[in-house]
Amino acid sequence: MRLRTFHAISATVITSYAAIHIANHLAALGGTATHIAFMEAARSVYRIRFVDAVLLACVLFQVLSGLWLVARGWRQRRGTVSWLQAVAGTYLAFFLVVHVSAVLFGRLSLGLDTNFYFAAAGFQVRPFQLFFAPYYLLGVLALFTHLGCAAYWRAKSSGRSSPFLFIALPVAVGSLVSLVIVLLLAGVFYRAEIPPEYRAIYVPRA
Ligand code: HEM
Image (tube, rainbow, N blue to C red; front, side, top):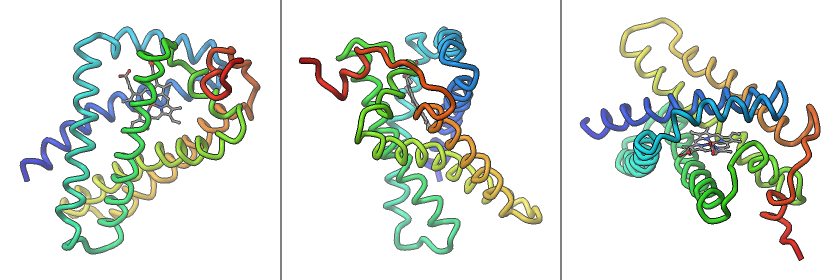
């Protein structure tokens, strides 16, 4: 019971960041300059050392506590929603570990500004888009689905009619949002010129 409460508190921190983060990626609909201007403004908050440290600590706690909750409840798990929540949460744990490690590696080890080009570079060098397209699509969708399942349990316990809507709506919105972000990164709406230092992550310079 205690662990679930902390898992929910930490989820609130990550979801607040993710809401700004996803809006930031959607801002690329207005062009890469709009995306980067949005990012600079948002960074003035989430790049404050204390805020960044709290966010990263929450990510670590979320992954460990989430995987523990999935493992602990494995045998008692019954029903579609319960399994959907566990599967979405497990993918989210994988996504967060890979995603945040890649961002920290890009920032601290490669010395790159981890902006739009950092994410888009993986879509413009074959065959890496075969990994990045499903990886990002499922990452965003898993977040919306996992939160939708939590909303479903709350709706159900408070006796609301049609609790399934609390999952269906986030899944529909998450599918659309993730598709738009991936199409933006893949250069379907417009082709962004990727600076050579970002392409070099995938194509080592001679
Ligand atoms: C298609 C979807 C996504 C893309 C393209 C993407 C890309 C990025 C990029 C480029 C950064 C670096 C930001 C910066 O340097 O200011 C970043 C950081 C991060 N992202 Fe994502 N992201 C996506 C989805 C998500 C989701 C769904 C989550 C959470 C569930 C998430 C969690 C994080 C976290 C925790 C950081 C590290 C923040 C920090 O400490 O600076 N991302 N992402």
